[in-house]
Image (cartoon, rainbow, N blue to C red; front, top):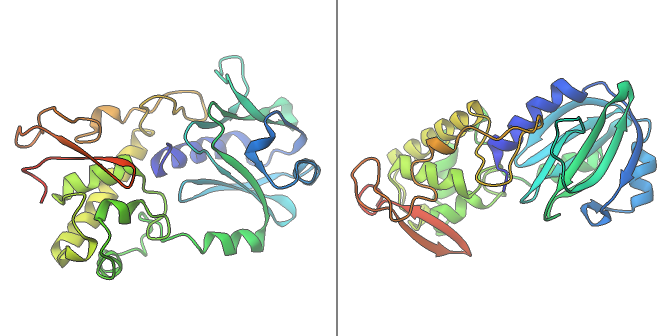
Length: 270
């Protein structure tokens, strides 16, 4: 599932591709990805322009003219790209015909992603339900520690809850916990202040590094230009069960809780 670095990469691509273009027509090929009435979705978007593009958590946020906001969540296998000769868009779900001869396509193999249209004020209210952005300069390690101290949830589960922290998914939660030396099942309120500070630093380092490498492709993820991310070789723990830890050479272990796999080194993480 695309997480913060993958979505941020796509957002940065789209800013260069479609900002200030106008939607001339909309074709909905797979209605189940559009939330709300399809006819209203199409008629409202026609004639609207992309004023700016941003990210909120794992969501692509397209700020349209006339105070509308189109929010796209990529689900597990969603893509958003220009429909060019070299694109590999095998499962198109929604096509936006733009001026200047461009066509923007939402493509989704499993169709777990969603496209939802909001008025600006309604999106603001929806956005406020998400947790803070981990890369925001306003989000300090003391904020993280204070929030952790009030929860007994396993720290990996706490990190995946988008109401606690927006954008972190299983790949980068595992990587950050490994870098910080924290076991994924440690109760959140059992982290001491120095550990919370180190975890905060680890999250920032892991996420920024993944963004610099244009995201992690394990199977389906592609950026908006159709290319795979380059971050997979940098993964130190995720998906490496029964392989030697890069730090101490102990074998990486895998456990499943809350229906998600967690990977950890039994020697380096406690």
